[in-house]
Length: 443
Image (cartoon, rainbow, N blue to C red; front, side):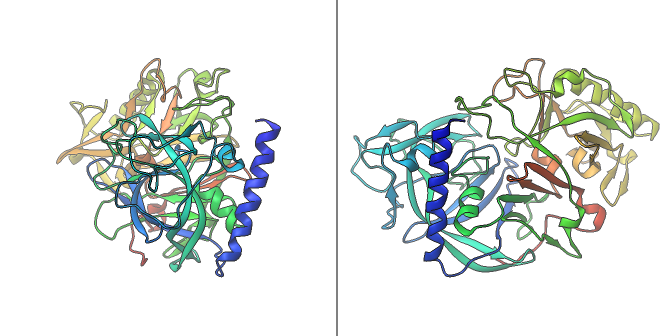
């Protein structure tokens, strides 16, 4: 990245840190609830924006670069301030163009001489230009790691507001879960939620996800920002975390490409084991090539882990063989899965179906073990399938990565993204400790 970018970043973060004086309560960390949609299998949270506060239910995407939302006629905030073209905040937000409001009356989200940015819809895989602006973000709760404490109003929060039909796209929210108004991006950028809150309140620049495995009402997961502890009765789950480096892909991985390194989250996977046996495949696929393809990336926008075809076939073959040793009966596959089994021949355990374990062996020798609750998915009353899918021989953007670890494999696992030390903390399944991400917490 250029020297000018870093100078702008330092100036931007200093401005954010000054704004904490307008909020007398200095939290040690924040917490937001996570809900799972039963139809799309997307995960979402809720915040409020503006004055008067407008409730926004947003899909969580750890790959998206910032918070964006549809700002229709119901959003007329008296505290909204558009960011002007050419300003330092426009530059640090990586504004792409200067936007004017030509076909609609001027209003919140439709102003002239405004810094524009490309907002990406990960479900429908398209992007549109949105206006970058500042407003009051609320319904963020401070936390001691165990419960939500006070509701904090965050001033001057930078996000992207996309006005419907402004650019000829009728449904900006296509593919997002019903009722959702945009996307909460958590990527490694200057205007993502973790970065802005850390600068504003002088918190550790880290966030943690605990994705719920159920869509039952009031059984929610958690998004923590600012660090632990992370209480999941009867434990502080932070003591179960083990760490591996987060690595930077030096090439932008899109979906909007630029000359900067990727802002997404990659880990250095060394090998895969099934019940302790190393899966045999071309391990050069696990390295990031000069053009940015290959490697292993964590994503929340897809439910099931996608593997390069050669890795997928080797994993399925070994899993089926190890399942046979356990007398688990294979049945006809159910798309999109390649290996399915008669659930009546599978035992039960504290960590889900008693099937072969899958170990992701990572940099430093640590293992992320995937147990039955995360490796299997129910396809019908009597059929369970291996919850991994074939990503193809030559995956195309945004799937040029050899392995995309999907959200199903993350459920009931606490994941901590430390953006200062560049490391990922993970617990493997909390079910082993009689705990779960799907729990009741008062907000």
